[in-house]
Amino acid sequence: MLKQHLQFKLSQKLSPQQIQLMKLIQLPTQAFEQRLKQELEENPALESGKEESESPDDEFEDDYELEDSETIEAEDINIDDYLSDDEIPDYRTQANNYSSDDEEKSVPYAAGTSFNQYLLNQMNTVYLNDEEWAIAEFLVGSIDESGYIRRPITDILDDLAFTQNIYTEEKIIMHILSIVQTLDPPGVGARSLEESLVIQLERKGLTSSIELAIQILKKSFDQFSKKHYQKLIQKYNVTEAELKEAISEIEKLNPKPGGSYSGNNRIVEHVVPDFSIRIVEGELELSLNGRNAPELHVSREYNNMLKGYKESHDKSKSQKDTVMFIKQKLDAAKWFIDAIRQRQQTLFITMNSIMQYQKEYFLSGDERNLRPMILKDIADEIKMDVSTVSRVANSKYVDTPYGTKLIKQYFSESMKNEQGEDVSTKEIKKILETVIKDEVKRKPLTDDRLAAILKEKGYPIARRTVAKYREQLGIPVARLRKEI
Image (cartoon, rainbow, N blue to C red; front, side, top):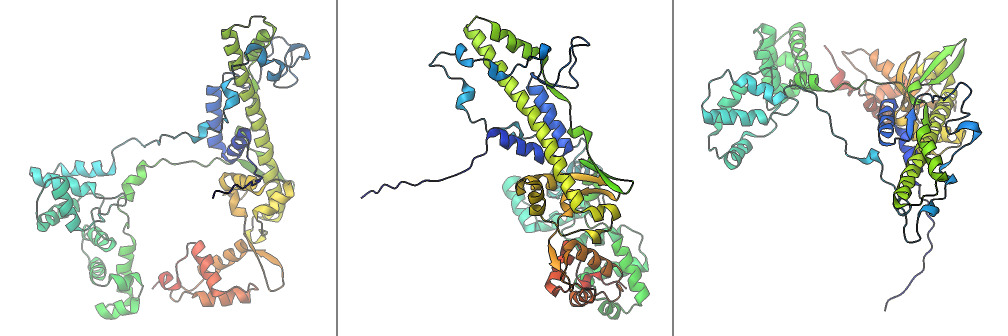
């Protein structure tokens, strides 16, 4: 038997305008400029720059005001006068949640020859028959952007048979592969890191240190990667100086040979600071990048057009459509201007609160002066939602006397030192980084020893926490930091 239930549910939904505003707040300066340019192109009722008056005495009190202090608002005209009862404008029946920001963006590619084509062009100097050329082309096509062939030869054999209708033998593929591995950059076409390094060394003039380095890579790569130097000295009966010279040759090599080419085709994104902090007479001074504060106004021509249609007594279909179009464009233009102003205010208030919260750091530049700070601290201070603070912090940069920094870097959790004071985890990481930098590289400090040193300095944290902070700093374990 079916049962009916009545359930009440209270939910909060953002309006389309609120959604758009959140997206605007999240945009960094360069992306915001693109969004502004797009809006100006799509909405003829929105104009940039200072609004020109028709006469010296004809000034606007604000962006929307007309002559003789008369303000024309989109609401001043009764749209119902132009519509019959059975005709409802589309804009009333649509949620308008769609934003042009959601459109698929075309990805720009850097002009020039691709990495694989660059390799194939080199193959043109080698004499190969049709089948050999097809195999070579397939091998080159299997090279990834780092310069490696990651697939087993047996899989390549199968793919050649199924996709190219080429039935060959493994020794023929290995022969063609050896030719591919002679191409530039050195080390390309290798199937493993050790093979790539060996290829690069063999392209150099053979010396005793290079020969030793090749032997180590071919026969003792595991011991080398784990830095078991004493075992290598005993195995190859060499001195510590000779081993150090061989290792030096290996360290000069490129572990990603393909990166040296493909990196040149990457688009370099320049960071544009959204804020600037200066120290003026011992006080902090915050400014918002002027590119975030464009001068916008509603088109005088569109305002006059709306005023004219308001005074018109013609209620034809074309008049009705024109009024609907003008109203929508004016509404959009006025909302966009208000949204830009609100974005400016939100950005400035949020960053100013962050600056004051971390005043001691911004005056000194010493990261040990960074206070523990989470998003909620700033949200509570400025009486805004945590998500709003997050949107400002995650994608914006600030230019300081100590360099350009991502704002979210100033946020950190806290822990208590031995005196019971709250200290930033960034302060602990900075001390940890300094301790590791000053350690004796022949005998690097273990995580247990690092934890003990931090405890001596007044920061009682566990070994596993030290390991977590070390990994976040991108510092390897003690064994891999060892040097001869």
